[in-house]
Every structure is written in structure tokens, then in C-alpha cells.
Length: 382
Image 1 (spheres, rainbow, N blue to C red):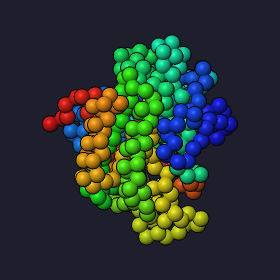
Image 2: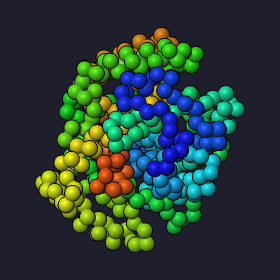
Image 3: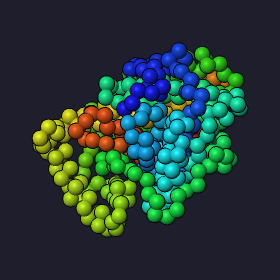
């Protein structure tokens, strides 16, 4: 990656520091905020297609990565969408990548993925700001954490149709090289996969909210690996993978879907055999790769609020939600929580021989999308 103003931001490796305001620096003045969001993702969830929703969210990040190769830019995966920040000098390729990603979601996934590119200057003119820092769970990957409150304005602007990017015409596909979803859903080991979104209440002081976040994190510290939902030895594998059709749709270029799925069956069968048996192939160590997958996941993050997917008991989930309810009643925060039995893992693997592959975690039955509905006080789908 090139050294840029994004790459030079603060880096921290202890997640508890995520609410330390001194770590965050403002985005460069000429940055653009890219956002995507699956419209009516609840319908897709009801149809059992949340894995496709996650794929659409991760596709935007992948497409932009491939559109500006070698560039370090901050991003966050939100389940049914994504947020990223890019320099104005990359506007043309990023705009094209997002337009093509919307077309991919429409043509291949049957989803309406809205996209927008919002000038940071518009966010600041409205009284908001976007600051960021890098959380480094290990030396091989880093994930952006956002603060400042400006993402709320950006999301509202996108949903109001401002700064919209129209989907590209049929046939114009994004470059989604590296995007895959070969792992099986990860079953909870403790009974509950809890998707949490926690936001600062309007009028609450930043210091109050920081203490509340630390309170919740301290409750989760008693869990095995802080509630990490993916086993230390790596996610489960099986063949054929449940996401084979989705990966075929993402990776096919000038070939039919049937042909791509046929080829991918052989590719994934070989991959499954190697990962399942632990057989080393040259310098590739499958046991190391699977362990690294777990270490590289984004199961907790901060984008103007705490966002987590954790594995816990029903009793722990009750305690966490009870405490969050108390903090909400005191005017410090708002929150949404959704419980399910499994987690999903969606991957960006530019090169499996290197340890910098990235893995996005969400609840398997609605995860962040349904937690967000609860946050907004919307009724859950029947």
C-alpha cells in the first residue's frame, strides 16, 4: 500500500482504546465519503438471503480496493452496506466501481443497492465531522474506526437521494477479485450470537458515552476471547460451500454462470480438501491460514458507535441488554440488539499466501440489519 494521509493515521491494538478521542484525526478536507445500503434488506432476510446481503455489502469494499490498487483507505463493513473514505483524486474510479457494484447487486443478487459519494465538505458544512483511526487486531490487518458524528448526516443524505450514484448499465461488472464466502455459518458455542449496535444519545456528552462503552466492554471481557464468535482454529468448512452460487456470480467474467459454477466446484473441492485435512501445499499452511482467518476478523468495530457480533450465553445477553437499557433510560445511549444461533463470515482474500486477508463477521439471521431496525425503534419482521 502507498503511504498516504490515510495510512499515516493513529494505530492502536487494544480495542478498549476505541473510545479514546485523542486517537482520532480528521479526514483530509478533500475526502469523499462512499456509502452503500441494501434497500429493504428485511425482505431478503425473510427470504433467507442475508448471506447475499452481506455479499453486497462486502462487494463495495472489494470493488473500490481493486479500482484504486495499492491505496490505503479507511472503510467499515456494516452488514447490509459499507462506508469508506477516499481522496478526491480517486473520485472517477471509485464512482465507477460503486456504480458497477450496484449493477452487480441488481443483476446477480436481485438486490437494490443504493450508493452515494458524499463530499466531506458537505458533512462539515452541516456541522458534522468524520474522524478516524486504525485498529490493528494483529500486525497483518487493520480496520478503520470512525467517530465525529458526521456519518449520521452522510447516511441521511444518501437515503434522501442526495449525492446518489446510479447503477451502471447491465453488463458493466465491478472487479470483485478476492471476494469469497466459502466458510460455513459458524454456530454459537454458548447459545447466542448477539449482534449489537450502540450509539451515543442526542445531547449526551462524549465522555459519558465513552464510559458506557467501557462498561459494556468490561462485561464482555469475562467471555472466552472477549466473545469472539469464530473458533480460534478457524471457521468450519464443508463442500460444496453454501456460498458457491454467490461466489460464482461475483467471480465470473465473460462466461456463463453455469460454467463458472462448474469450474468453481473443482476449485472449492480442492480448497476444502486442503483446509479439512490440513495438508500443506508448498508454502501454504492451511492450519495457519484458518487460525489467521479468526485473528483477522472484524467482529467488533466503531463507526460513530459500537458495533459487535459476539458469542455468549442467553444469560450474558440478558445482562448486557439490561445494562444497555439502564444506560438508555439515563439518556446516555441508544442501542439495537438481535439474537441468532449462527454467524456469517464473508472474505476478501487478495492472496491466500499472505496473512493480510480480511474477514467480515455478521449474525446469520439478520445480524446488524435487524439490530439497526431495533435501534431505530422499528418493528421486527414477522
